[in-house]
Length: 248
Ligand code: ATP
Image: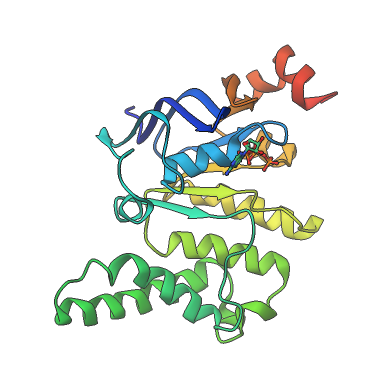
């Protein structure tokens, strides 16, 4: 199977500090690929470089074989990369439906150059929002302001906003952070279901989730890859256990 996304020798320097150091990764389509590692390992910076939030200092990023490293974030979105952030990123005063519509429009409206296509894109955004509300199981909250949802629902809505642009690859940065046990279990099922439709890159500190739903795991430490493999391989990797997983 050909990778959908590849990082080849990607580095990111901030002045003299190297946050991401010569990372090479293949992400296979339809998989959940988790990136784990201690605080400050460079996971979020790696996501930033892949999605275009920050420019890389060196290396190459291929999406379906096409070089995208030089493209700004919004162009990578139009090619199928979508991102949810570590901190919730919703419009709290807008309804659930409006949040999803805006996210969908963000991808399609900007590309529709003539007025007729723009009307079409607005209709499409409405359809996408309706479908997503069902998928996110937020039917009873569609007109509720996003800021009034529970924390777990907000995080789910945020993933929904990443899905709204109908991407190929979704980046999720700590989607369960700050959640209670029930919300975590729901989110885990939800993310697991995503790989039917998408390729998922996941940063997650909750090892139960990572070990249960990942197809592939990359472990980072000090900007570099410490280990990569399937959950069982990572669980049994002595280096990883010592550096990160403790007494798992
Ligand atoms: P966490 O699990 O705590 O979110 P992480 O693995 O995602 O950590 P990053 O946020 O990628 O780690 O940070 C990696 C390193 O890069 C850290 O030492 C951080 O201080 C540094 N760093 C991140 N962004 C910048 C920046 N804009 N300027 C300078 N240093 C930065």
